[in-house]
Amino acid sequence: MTTGLPFDDFRTLIETLPGPDEAAVAAVRKRDSTLTKPPGALGRMEEIVEWLAAWTGRSRPQVTRPLVAVFAGNHGVTAKGVSPYPSSVTAQMVENFAAGGAAINQICIANDLGLKIFDLALEYPTADITEEAAMDEKTCAATMAFGMESIAGGTDLLCIGEMGIGNTTIAAAIFHALYGGTAEEWVGPGTGATTDGMKRKAEAVRTAVALHGAHLKDPLEVLRRLGGREIAAMAGAILATRAERIPVIIDGYVATSAAAILHAANPEAIDHCLFGHVSAEPGHRKVLEKLGKKPLLDLGMRLGEGTGAALAAGIVKAAALCHSGMATFDQAGVSNRD
Image 1: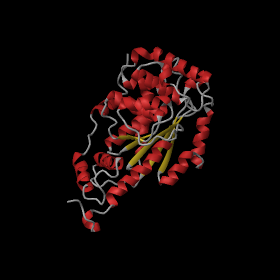
Image 2: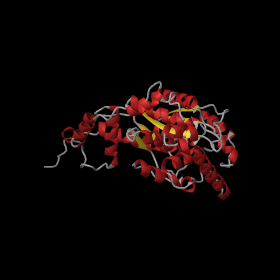
Image 3: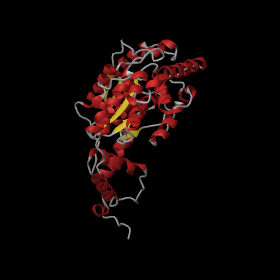
Image 4: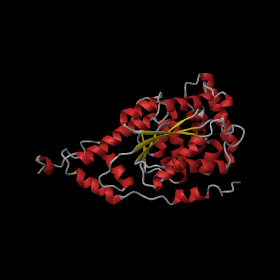
């Protein structure tokens, strides 16, 4: 049985989230009808501006302080041979991020995005989910609270990403717990698992979900039993942004597992989230369909690090500038339709 106590504040928060600003959306639509373009000519870019308005409350939304937050965690389940890389690579990649040598660094430079890396006790992996719960409630709640602090210092668009050897196995276990099916449906190659590695991943997912099955009706129990620190922190960050009216772009397969936990608890909890891309990880497209979300990009990527979200941020920034900076027909002296 769960005590519920460490999660009480989060349960309350999840049920009392602020909704969209419909007045701001209406103002965007009104201005859009006067801009020097045919109605709907910018396609989904116009929808993005409405989304920004809804969740910032600004009738002429701008993106001036975008931030990519990458959360890094390690997982005890790697002992089961679910990844071709050792857990030590997580810390090595965090050092690479800090040195500016990773893909996410280059994408942030290209799109003028801030970047913060969060090392979540990499020297202390979560417990092996095939043998016990990944975290106790206190640890999970504290990690969610830590994730909420990722927006300290201010941002007006948060891109969520992660790094963690073994975490595609963790994400697959979460999706299997939330949506059923077989373990094989949710397991993909991750960082390049071989056929034997894929079998080990599927077996780990199947074993973990069976072990914790009696407790998996509660999404927060799914998070603490099957998740990881980076996933708990991402869930916390998503909640914090909603409370502060900051739009969010979610990255790939693993980042989506954090959003899926919140969606399972309250389907409206991720309405302020845009999904930056659909990963090449096979289960990601299926998850997005279950969430009712249409990804912005489909580039065959599966790197993580927030790379898909960061690429999408460039499009979001351009959409906001098109709306706020484009002249109206009257301003430009261009004839409008009769």
